[in-house]
Amino acid sequence: MPASVMKTRRVAVLADSDTRWKWGALTANRIAPEDSDIRLDGYLLRGRATPTPRQLQEVGVHADSLSEVSAVEFLRTMAQEQYDVLVLALVGGGVQAILHGLKRVWEGRSDRPVVVTGYVGVVYEKLADGLLLRHGADLVLANSRQDAERFRAVYDGVGADSSSVTEVALPFLGGEPYTGEHDPYTVVFAAQPSVPDTRKDRTYLLNRLIQHARKHPEREVLLKLRSKPGEHTTHIEELPYQKLVQRLEPPANFKLVYGNMGEVLDRTDLLVTISSTAALESLHRRIPTVVLTDLGVREMHGNHHFVGSGCLASWDQLDEGHRPSPDEEWVSRQGVCADGTYAHAFDPTRERIAKLLGRPGGLPALTPYYTPATAPGYLPGILARHHLGVDGSPLPGAPAHDREPGPVRQIVRRAARGAYRHGVQRVAPVIRRMGEL
Image 1 (cartoon, one colour):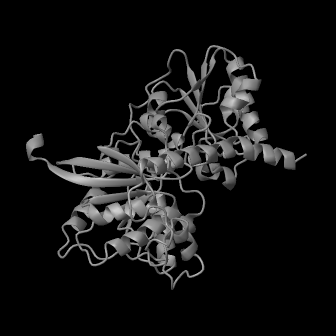
Image 2 (tube, one colour; image 1 turned 120 degrees about the horizontal axis):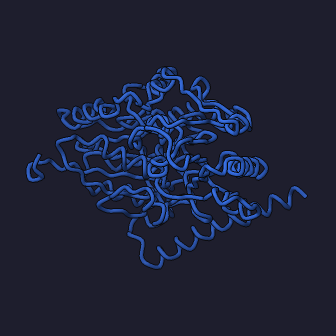
Image 3 (spheres, helix red, strand yellow; image 1 turned 45 degrees about the horizontal axis):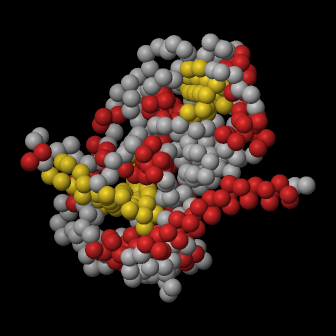
């Protein structure tokens, strides 16, 4: 359709980390009608994991505008701006706080945006907690058929409206299907910031990866890293692999790589991980994929989610040439869409949003499950973390709730965040080691 006759949909995405920004921005593009243009405004929630410019560039998602805000500043903007859709790409507590804040600033207003939220990837922990904190959005996206069934069961089980649950797929899937081995044959280990979280386990995995490179000198063995030291992602990384590898002497065919996961998968022959969402990206492209069992199949590692997938294996098996064969039924339930149906995975969401935007009389007020009546001992603390009271209004003394931050305040904020990251990366591990003496 010629650009001159295309409708423009205004979409805002609020995210609190690089991974969630990627999910939110890509979701915003996926759920836009095919006959429309999209004006995408990004808002980065200020905190420990606010993405750096390098991380944003690596994500590779374009926004028409991008700004860093506090929750109170964002709510002030939402009271003034007109959007069609708002995507909340936040941790559960952040979603809940923003929902209550939006309910207040949109009070009496029927022309509000459609509010969409969901999860970045595999949901393997805090299912009930995370879901109920997201309740109140117009759409709660489930990345697979399995998740949609579980989400509805939780909402129905507590007497909450489950009609918001909408099945989609992971928005960052794509790329060409795997057609055969590359030269050289390339093994990629997709690292995770917090899984596993001990020096012993992370050193073990690194040693096994290096041993695999030595045993197969004809292969290229890549350690795909999420962030550089000092940067934070969705989870804190206190023991970066970059630092651990400095004490070792890996062979020439072992390399550390950064960059977009899709580009790395373009040259991958075997994807290995503990439980990274990269495994689902790899399965979508039918690349041989292994979820490691070396450290056990455990809820704390998230690899229990892959029980029944056919992808569980150990480094010993990989060293001997094992190639996994995924279970097709399991894959089809995970939103991986390896059967070619991915192009239509977001059609139901587009239809629901169109109906909501065309609803006679506009949209009703947001109604989260948690209220001062249903969770009086839990909700106030969730809201207070974002300087909001139980009615969604700014608490007394909330930073910059009535004005835009000046240049001095912005400099102080950047310095404070840098100090926090230094504390997590360097000071906290030292204190813990001293405690173990």
